[in-house]
Image (tube, rainbow, N blue to C red):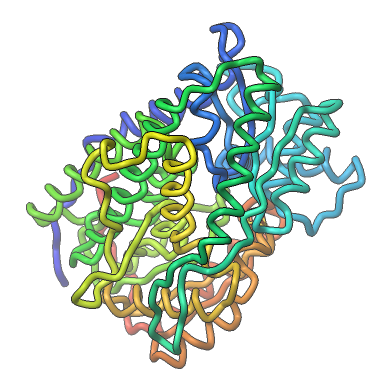
Length: 451
Ligand code: SF4
């Protein structure tokens, strides 16, 4: 059995502090003279940054995941939402989020006991829940000004069986989103009474490019055997991109993290000491039960990430040698146009290349990307979460299972819900893991990683 050296991430505490600071900044924005806005993790968050450096956001999905992690609070939120008459089979992030508003409780009571109401909403819409999520938020709060960008434009990819390639997003589709962003800027300036600053927007777009490319570089390093990070840790790291991918702090942090992960690889530092088999997962995990990933370690099994952790924030491209790697960044901010329309055009072209947008268009695109990861990251199997809480990312997952199996990979499925613990059967999942590990030919070991 291999025995690798492990050590805690040096940036671990900084990572935790940054996340808490995000929720504190949002909660205390008003007392510090700033503004608050709400939108999703998919939102074009560089756009509101032109309003000023004191304009803080709360992103829906990671906020809801924080609620889900706190199982008691989550249950109260879910029940409060159901009591208001909302159906239990809607997106569970959305239901947790609405519950926090209905109860008027913030998931971070150390910063605010009450739910800090946003001043405006800036959202985009590709999943059927995206715009409706915030329409209800606005209604629950008695009417918050809201702007939603329609981003269902066109895939940036074509797949042919196990192969895929990037294609140019049609210019009319780019212009469609760009024009909505231009209108949104006028709208934001009007509802906030602020003067919009294009240089702040340009800085945010460049930060977005840095953050998303560097996160993909970090995920690329997961190809290494032994993997320098495990998926449970990656959840605590990718989250920064979901909080503020266009922020200076996030772009700087990923640059620092990339250096640390490179160093781990150079020194052979592993996520787990007994890496024997490598798997990946898919979609959001059941947040209240992350211990599933620690259980895998007892078998010497490391989950190296997933298309979700790699591609929700990471920006990728196919390299000349056929490998899939981080998208090449502009050399410097000076490479970006200085006029509003020009810089937004580059932003839109960059953003909609991202893997997670693609599989909204067809499951074949997701299958091709997953097979690529399974082969190039040297995986022994795949664990698919049939996630009832997220129709957006789970639709087509059964087709993905078949495609992965046809490509020769053992696949385990487990049913659950990222944000509703009532739909996760822990004992059954553990027993399915036991059977899957047996299929992969490994038995329980005793060594545990240093975390
Ligand atoms: S269903 Fe999934 S993709 Fe859609 S809003 Fe909810 S979490 Fe996001």
